[in-house]
Image (cartoon, rainbow, N blue to C red; front, side, top):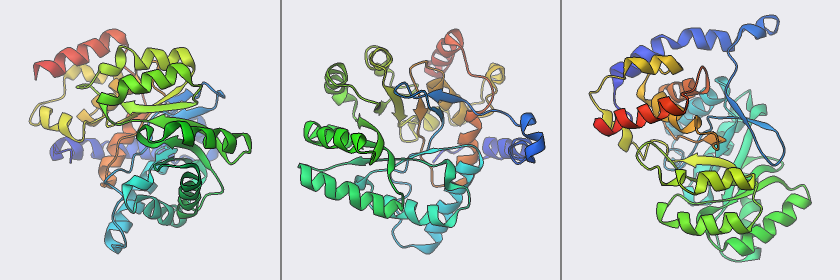
Length: 308
């Protein structure tokens, strides 16, 4: 999806140092780089700022070769400090494949399991959420979200009851459509939510005007989806060299440029790029380490991108 194979190869050649640092013995753990983590406002719990989406990428059914590749993607995610994995019943076989992959890997303890309810009606919603829990093979979800605001009042009432009973830890609502931002804003202003999820990236910055400030004001953690605009940002920079000044915030490639731009916004808690390529996952997770651009540098990043 990303292109820029030579840039990726150059990055991956330099990844060995980071990988070695992340695998240091316990006695030398202090030498390992610390991942960028953000507090969840509702609790103060800290969450690694790069998560993993699964839309399109994990919908591979029973194909054994494709499943093995996804296992390696998930393994690379956890090996490099990831925690939040996001899915939905809307994503075909993704939840089943995630559950299978989780059974195969050895360091799933870091998992922050996040999925969604995507149906109409209370009973159907409860049935769907229980089916998702069985597919993942988890005792409970860390985060359950109402997908694309579908029947959100009914489902949110169920989520509040489930949270009170300890059956989920956090609740939220999502949209991946910019045209729904106004509706999401109204819900966020009215309801107390632990999390909200919406689209934000270098080319789609509408959320900066109202949603991101409102989420901060209302104490809601923000998950950002589609940070690469479904690969469109890479199309925009194809054949272009990364600016030299990107090294000032420890950015080695365009994937990290796009992700660090999002993560550096003070209202963002976690961003969830999706990939079906283990090497691309390793590249994405590089954005979890090092410095972040400040506000002035973020504006410079916008201006540079818009000139391309």
